[in-house]
Length: 260
Image (cartoon, rainbow, N blue to C red; front, side):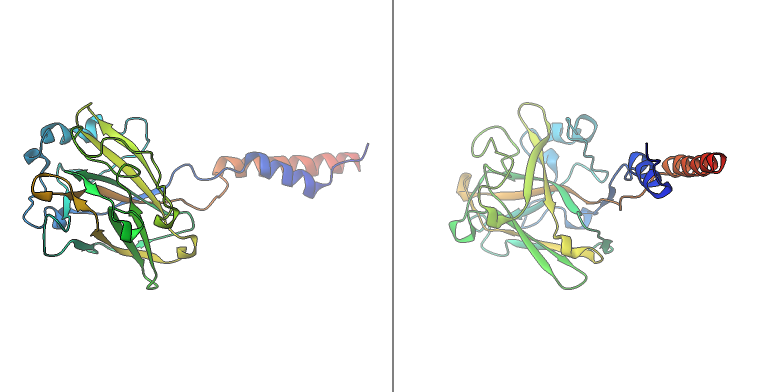
C-alpha cells in the first residue's frame, strides 16, 4: 500500500478542520435624525395598533435569526405622490461609511401604511431604494407590494406577500415576516449588494416612493423601522482547527522518521 505524502495528509487535515467565522459583522444604521417626514411624526404609538409594535423587539425575531439593535418604536416615513405633492424621496447618509466585502447585504424592516399601488413605469415597484458606495457606484432595488412589502396592519390593502419580487429587474431582494401579533406585523427585507463592491464602503441610500396611495384621500406611505448592514467575514480557520492541524502534521513527521 502506498503511504500518503505529508502534503496530501496536511491538506486533508486542513479541509477537515478549517471552518469559516461563525457570524456576520452587523452594523446598525442610526435613523433617529430621519424619523417622521412630510408631516408624519413617525411614532408607532400614533398608528392603529402601534402600541403593540413598540414592544416588537422583545417579542420579535420570530425564527428569522435577525435582530435590530437600534429599535426605538419610531419609523422613517416617506409618502406616496398621491399623499404629498412635494418630495417623495429621502436620502439617508448621516452615518459613517461602512466597509464592505463580497456577499455583504442590507437588512431592514419595511412596511406600508394604507397601501401603495405598484407603478408600471418602474417595473411594478412601489418603493425604489438606491444604495451608493465610496467609489461612486450605485445599485437600485425595488419593493413590490404583495411581493416584498405589505401593509403593517392586517386590515385593508396588501396583507400577504410572496417573499421575492416577481420582476427580476428589481434586484436580489427577499422578504420574510420578522414579527406579528396577528393584527400588526413588521417584515424584514434583505438586499444583496453587488459583489464588485467588495473593498468599498456603503455611504448612503435614497428612498423613492413611486407607488400611489390607496387609503383615504389616496394616502400611502413607506415605513422604515430599522436597518443593518450584514457583512460576512472572510473564511478563515478557527484557532482550534489550526492547533489540530499543527499537531497532525508534527505527528505525521515523527511517524515517518520512525519508519525511515
